[in-house]
Amino acid sequence: MISYEPFFRTLKEKNVSTYKLIRKYKVSSSLIDKLKHNRSVTTKTINDLCILLDCKADDIFEYVKDENEKPFYKEIEE
Image (cartoon, rainbow, N blue to C red; front, side, top):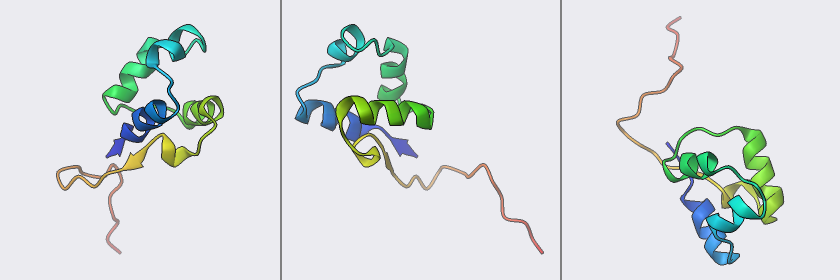
């Protein structure tokens, strides 16, 4: 699964609050909610957050293996 825990660590390291993102930079509160609950966001959103926070993509998200999660794509038997 994709985890946005690095995003919240990055905010803390850069001393930026979610309130500041919403009020000063006009980031939507629904986006913050998506990140808090590890929901899907677009690569455009990741790009915008990287620009805004002057960081890399791995400062925003990480892949965490979940044994219970099934892939969308399936292997085709040949």
